[in-house]
Image (cartoon, rainbow, N blue to C red; front, side):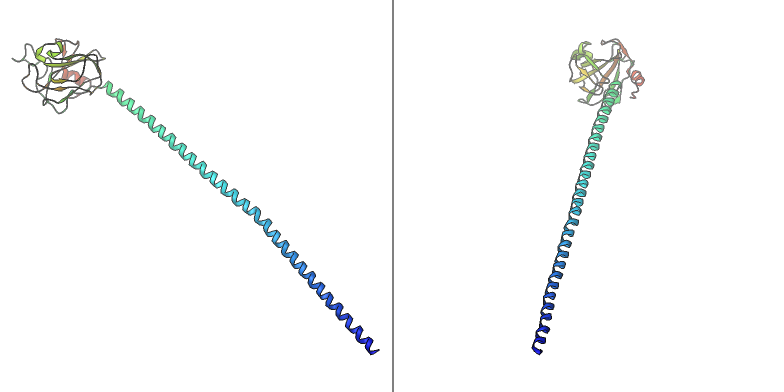
Length: 237
């Protein structure tokens, strides 16, 4: 009876050990499953986050490109507007210049005036003299067309030396005489302020100067008072 009791006592201990092993395995299984589940859950959460970050980056890049394109468009529009304004201003200036009159020379001294009498002229003086050094640029007093140009007073006689006559749209003519050099030809269109000759001392001249006339025809004998005419077109001499 004593031996049987010892065997009965040993068996329950073996069952306990086996149960503990099974329990430990189950626990490991549960822990492993939980870890797998956790890992799976972490990956699933990361994927939407990465997608969201990429979408934001693309949207920001698109916005930056749109902003740059808009800035470039505005810059191009401003450049075109500035160019148009510049062209319009240039056109207005040219139109204003064409409509204006100017003195034929710069830095001058007025000498013999219109209507002056004296031994130097067969009749009274027909123009206004501007005393300037030989070689001074002579400019067209107004836009017009050259109708006379050359020596012998351009056809008005040797007293004028080398001369130029320009016809203007208002029916008046301007004459420039005693020139050292003529830079224009008959039929040439000239603008206000354009150089047409160099002053000189040719013809019947007592010293270097420009003889300037305003005429009603291209020929000698139709002169008006040039100083009074220039004042009437807002040119002060």
